[in-house]
Length: 464
Ligand code: NAD
View (cartoon, rainbow, N blue to C red):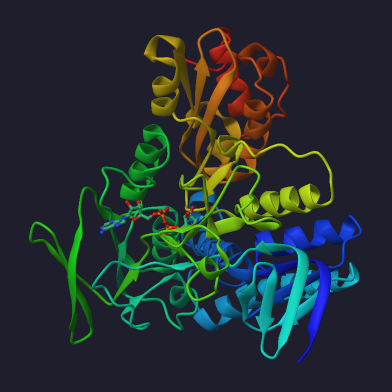
């Protein structure tokens, strides 16, 4: 039994926790990073990275099926799920090895085990206690379900099990048409499954600008992905070979399995947070905009938190940014709060949905309809989109005679374009300033340039 002291103890080695540890070590702090599973957390092992690998395998399957349209004779023979997992797990393990090496190379001590707060800045792991001058809580989130809907892990599953299925399901109902729901609907459809999404709100990816949601819905219809909007789950029962899902209103859908994708809850239960005076609401650790918990020297980052009680984006790159902000704050550097509207958001379905800044609805609410201008540039005018055979659009939301407030894009590979849109939003660029930038031809990034030419009143490849 030992009591070890360090400058900073970080509880949780996911995106938020390890980013804080890396930056703090860079600033000369002694850091202990406590992780019960593997460093890299949900994002690397059960989230972003493996899901995008599945989606990429799905894209290759679609390309094989559609190859003749490009004059290439290939035959699609099927999905070898063991082979897909080998590829996916290879990507994860390569990244995991790299990350572990990086953390160790910065002199950070990784403690393997489940930690629990036993003092305001003390974490117990097994028989040992780790006390920091500062403590950073970064215990992340878990897949939520609905009251009365039990995840049995085989017929009723969450994304964690969906990632390790040893076969392609013949059919699936996906509960929730948010990011996870739409990404799995896309990957499984590419693998050959028949998918139905059930979404309680009026649109898929309901947090997106409605124009983006509608573009995605159109594309999913073309891909024969069924979705039921304004539909709420009522109950599920087992059948001989799967599940029967009952919706409020009486509809039923039968499928091999039900994937529950109704959001992620904060992982805070039983960790001793409240006992140490840390404010927890609905499971979320409440912080201020500087990610301080209210207990001196205790900070929290990532999926675990709500800022001033407001919901907060559960994204790996938000975790990275918050981890860095806290480390720099502890290191005595000047920091500014994160503008969460300026964080890019991507749904990696086929097609992709990417956005940054305000939706039209949010801009109108903030400035009034008379002060908001929008334009839409259809990807049908873009040469590279035609080569890739993708449909979609770039929609801009701007203040009238003012800066760009939001960029919303749908199309294959457009996730890669949102980094430029991020600069446009965060630097409060005027339409004319972006219109003056020359975009490389032929790329889909030209659609961003064209949309700004249109917004600046000098459209190029646009029909009147
Ligand atoms: P989400 O909040 O994005 O979507 C959940 C959806 O379920 C919502 O649209 C909601 O209206 C719907 N829903 C809730 N209750 C319902 C009911 N009873 N019946 C029908 N529909 C219901 O959550 P998610 O997709 O589970 O993802 C969890 C978190 O992880 C999100 O914050 C997401 O942003 C993040 N994530 C991000 C990415 C990415 O950035 N590409 C990928 C995966 C997950």
